[in-house]
Image (cartoon, rainbow, N blue to C red):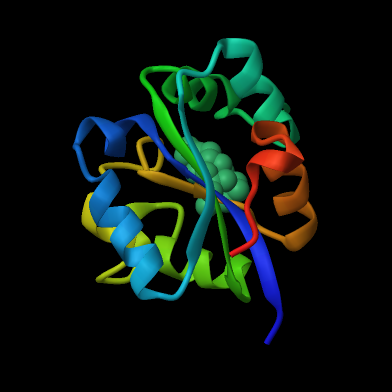
Length: 141
Ligand code: RTP
Ligand code: MG
C-alpha cells in the first residue's frame, strides 16, 4: 500500500446543497484524512488555470462557468492509494452512469453539475495540490 495525496474539490452544486459534511464523512469512513482545506470563490482565470488540460475540449467554457458559479470546498486528502480510493468514492463522471452509493450517484444532477472533482493520477495530484495550497499549509497526519 502506498500513502498518497489527492486533491478533492466539492463543486458549487454540492456546496449549495449543503452536503460538505456528508461528503467529508465518506472520505473519513474510507480512511482518507483531510490534510488541507479551504473554501474558495474561484475567479474565471483561476478556474481556467486549474482546468487548463481541458482547454481544447468543447465543454471547457461551460465547465469554467459552472466552477465559478459559487464557492467550492477544496481539500487535500491523504491515505492508502488515495487517488484511486477517492475516484472510487466519487463514481463515474456522468452521474447517470455512476454506481449506486457513490458521491456522484447520490449528490450530482448532471455531467456538468457533478458534485466533486478528484485528481486522476499521483502526478496530477501534486500539481493540483500545489495550485491551491502552499507547502506549509498541507499537514502530515
Ligand atoms: P473531474 O476532473 O472534475 O474530477 O472529473 P472527471 O475526471 O471525472 O472528468 P474529466 O474528463 O476530467 O472532465 C472534467 C469535468 O468536465 C465536465 N465534463 N463535461 N459535457 C461533457 O461531455 C463533459 N465531460 C466532462 C465534468 O464536469 C467533468 O467533471
Ligand atoms: Mg478529471
